[in-house]
Image (cartoon, rainbow, N blue to C red):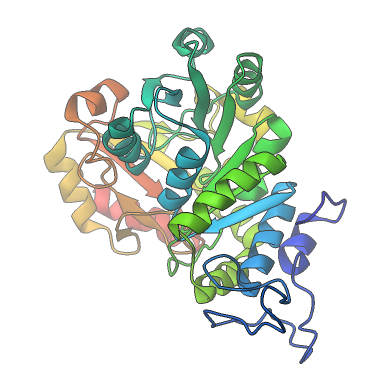
Length: 385
């Protein structure tokens, strides 16, 4: 679909996979709002038959993201979880085992623990920041390792090179959920992953107006297997969604720089605040995997987790008082969002699991937007006060 390029990231984000329309010269790829395509003769067509299988807008979008990840093949889906589900269905079967990071997005935990276990696939959720525990979790029937880095919501940074190398030696496929870093700050394929995936709902689109997912791989056999399941199950995005994500990708590099800049300043502000117990942000020297973050990421992202002093009443009062930040699920948009993982994004994780992971009632997750940082700090200060 595309090849690795020496062209700069910003140039790829704006141009990769998106030549001017050959019919009209339109600079933006058209929204091919069609379900079917005329054929010259039965089976003789121009590369498109039916939009569940392929659509020109989707093709351009997939080619752009593949270029941004430095990969050869990309497949777009109707949601991040549709992407997760299709990868799992395509590459695993009954009796297979998956090693998954314990601190994982609640929706990923739910689909693994409540859906795919019914189909006879086994999952072990383990702290992958401890490489000894990670290796001990592998079994003879382990076929995949599922990595999030940074994790959601505790922001543990996992050593992708070490984990993917471990998986390769054991004959397992490695998948990295790159949602929190986007293609701009982290390149899992270059770190040894077989597959990288995103919930493009978040940073890749960046405007809180699309739900979508995408996966990228260099392996043609993986691409073929997942493409078959995608077409068979129909987990595809609409042409308009593909167009909107491409629109968002054109400013990805600019947005991510501002997200990270704001997050670093806010993290340092919260560290010094009298009402804050602890701050977790990969860019802080206090982060336990700060050195790994510096090694495998080119920026630290826009996500911060912190513990407010007190318990649920104090957390609830604080969240009800914010004005610039929106109390809402999701993340990665240009607007700043704030939420309570135990009640909101990770409610599907059993309470005992949340406690073990550190997802306590005074835990707050922040998605730093690209507003003026002084306004964001003032808003947090008044809400904490």
